Image (cartoon, rainbow, N blue to C red; front, side, top):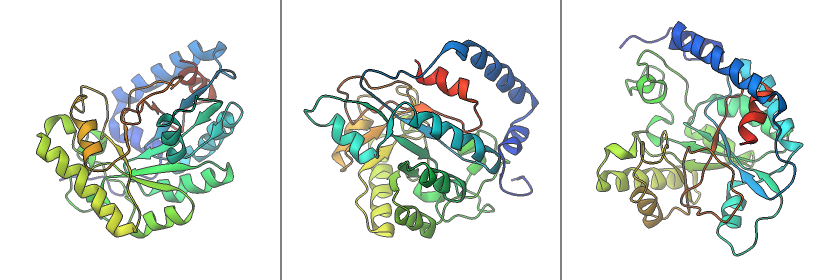
Length: 279
């Protein structure tokens, strides 16, 4: 397998690796969204929870990530995933405006870059990890590029189990993102159950915690997981939440076993952030 000379460290490096055409599409899309969003704003009234989620905070994304968190703080409070699920699972009415931050995939830069900025802004986050990749070497032949970026010659550094323990010591949370990061839709029910159960048990044994939250790999309902099967399997093996990647704010009582989230890229400007949170 041909790999990049070194693991990804900057977002611009990822853009280069993904190719010129994709980079141009991204520039055009970002410009269009920024223009459309000039008059958009985040709702400052009503009652809602938004679940922004990120995959990475590369070194050249840190400044904008800090700005994004500061923008969110102007419109709502940061709450933990435990608290968000407790609200959704209770008989209490939804009151106030809240942001619940999560990170998928278990990349090392979640610790080195994201944690200091989260702490600076007093924001809690839950980090969903695919257990097969935790503690792996960039040289391990685990299909990292194809699994996470759709291009097999890309490598990135993952968290170690000690890193995960450090994340917990910093006051953050850890959740499961399966073992192998395979789309659940392509697995049998028994295979899904094994992925969910083994990842849960591994996290609990390695970190000495109860692993109660699961996030579906890739996570688009109906395309990447089976809507009427996989959340139910997650509940059966002991999870109290099942997170997806369908966009949307929760204005009402919603099931903790089908949580909608908003995909974010830390390099986005503030107009783009306002655009997605205004929908």
